[in-house]
Image (cartoon, rainbow, N blue to C red; front, side):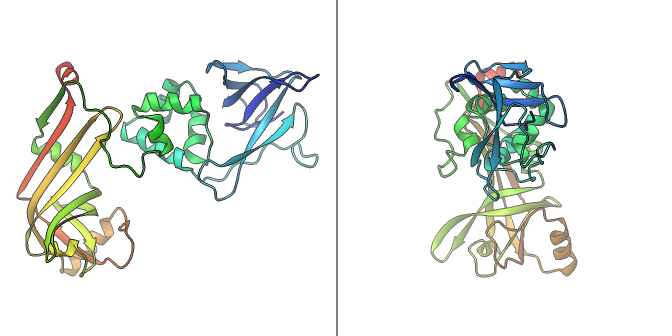
Length: 313
């Protein structure tokens, strides 16, 4: 018997073939996939060390190539049965091709400054299993996702991407919210080095606010655009640039506002520096080689937290 992380262990009656218990394999103790296994049972959500008997078999989860969405199909292996045409080799490794759920888990974990080991321990799973979830197009059980959502301070819906097309902030407000101003150092920390923000400009058709991929270089906000695009209207005027984050699960969030004059960057050496230090290409794609830089004359920010949490600090 050989298994991979994420496979199912099924225990059934040899006489009737009726499933008596099943669970997800969340931990391996041997690199070749042989028993014993750490199994999270679907009926109790508990993780136990299991040495499978003759009434157990493995249901392998094989992901369709190029899926990346968690699609999978089971393939059953009876205890002691070889995989493939008489092959006794361990299951081949899955390609490094993270699915949507895995990317969301990894993003939330990184955002909260947690290691895989810390997250796995708190969620009651092996670090190797968490690595599998983050790096492969996995199809984890509901129990595993619920535990991870709790550890990461988010929701099951968020990990599944259920609210991806909804505007942020649809949850309930805090019972006792506290809105406080951020000092300049806090604002700079939140702006960090790069990300996605919104630039507000005046156009012939009226005011407009558009998202842009930005870089923070020498205290200036810089972004790439096209000469005839809406963001290009920022050149030669004072603009407002805003970055924010909403924590749906905790009903908290922050925003930073930068105001200052914008100019087009034309000096070749300065353009080369911006290109060399850019963290990502514009998400919108296309030819966007015009760099615009806004030097802040005013930086302000605000954060919403619970009054109780503020008092504890």
